[in-house]
Image (cartoon, rainbow, N blue to C red; front, side):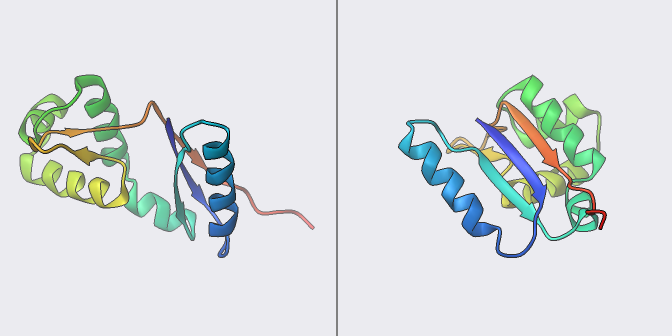
Length: 117
């Protein structure tokens, strides 16, 4: 399963719901979709440091926030803040044992360009 992060127009939730229903009917796990109203908002939330954390966490596997901070060679409090936000966005999951992990094989960022008239 992959996470698809996109800049989407308002009202695109219906399109996303249809895609997820189609995938479920075909017996596939629907991809996780996360939409932002603008590229500015997307990149304010998904900073290079946060994207690097996702990559590091995927490589390391399930671990504590402290272990992730060590693996990423970053300050614990900054990693803790970033992990909390990535968890809120649905890109990181926390287990009952409080280990964190990335449940996706890939993250795709879709950024449509303006249409030329």
